[in-house]
Image 1 (tube, rainbow, N blue to C red):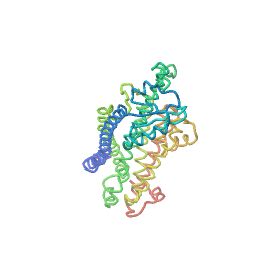
Image 2 (cartoon, rainbow, N blue to C red; image 1 turned 90 degrees about the horizontal axis):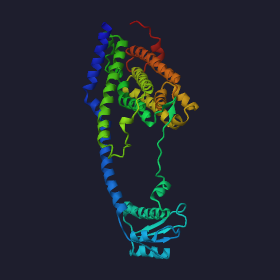
Image 3 (cartoon, helix red, strand yellow; image 1 turned 45 degrees about the horizontal axis):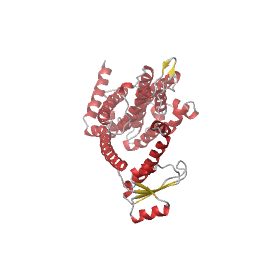
Image 4 (spheres, helix red, strand yellow; image 1 turned 60 degrees about the vertical axis):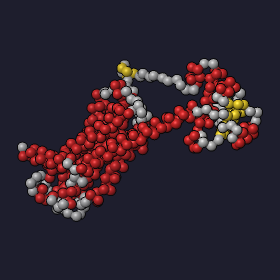
Length: 409
C-alpha cells in the first residue's frame, strides 16, 4: 500500500513538474507549429505557382516553326498564331531580330529526338511557356491525326486501373489497411525524438544536484525509477495528443489546397490483428528505449556525458530506414531478418512489416516478448546503476560494479 502511494506521488510529481515547464510546451508545440508554417508557405507558393502555370499555358504569342516530322496540323498551328517557315536559319534570324517571339523545330521522330525551342528571353520561369506551347501543339496535332480524343488520351497514359485482391476468400486490404498501423511508427519516432533528452535526464538531474542520497532515504530506488518511467509514458501520451491535434486540423482544413494526397479517411481499414500487434509493439518499443535511456542517464554524471549515447540510440532507431526498400520488397532478406530480431532495430522493422502484412504472427510474438522482457531487465539494471551511482558523484558508473551491488533495500 505504501509502495503504491509512493509510486503515485512520484508519477504525480514528475508529470506536474514537466507539464508546468514552459520549455516543455515550447518543444512540444515547436514541430507542429513549424508544420503549420510550412503548410502556409506551401499553400501560398502552390496558389502562386498554379496561377503562374495557368497564365503560361493560356498565354499567346507569335511563333514560327519547321516541321520535319510532318505531324503538325497547319490549321491548328495557324489558330495558335504559328507560321511555318522553310528553313531553321530563317526562324532563328526572326527570333533574334524580335520579329517573332518563338521558333520551334520539330525533328523527324519527336518520340526519340528533342524539339528545339528558341524564344525571346522572358526570365527563367517565363521561358517555360515556349516548351509548353511546342508540346501542346504536337499533342493536339497527334490527337487530330488519331481522330479520337479518347484513344489519344489512352496512348498518353491516361488509363487507370482499380484492383481488388483476395486473401482467404475475402477482399484483402490495400493501402487503406496499411496506413492505420503505419501511424504507430510515426508516433514512435515523434515520441522518441521529442522525449529522448527527457528520458536521458530523468535521473541525471538529481545526481547533478547531489540530492540522490537524500531522496533514497525516503523512497526505494526501484519505486523512484518505475515512477519516472510511468510519468514518461503519461507525458509521451500528452505530447502525441498535442502533436496530432494541430496537424490533424491543418490536414482536414487545407488538404485540398496543400497538394497532400487526398486520402478518404472513411475508406481506411482498421484491421484488428495489425492494430493490436502494432499497439503492443509501440508500447514495448517505447518501454525499451525509455528504460535504456534512463539506464544510460543513471550511469553518466552529467547530461553532457550522456548525450553521445543518445545520438547512438537515435542512429539505431533510424538504421532500418536505410533498408526500407528491402523491408518492403524482400522481407526474407538476411539483413531484414536481422533487423527484425535485433531488439533495438526490431521496433521500426517490425512496425513496417506489420503494416505491410509481411510480419508472421510467430515473429510478432517473439518481438513483443523480447521487447517487454528486455525492457524489464534493462529497467532492473537501471535501478542497480542508479543506486550504485548515488555514491559515485562526478564519475561514470561501472556496469560491473553496479551489477555486483548487493540488493539491500
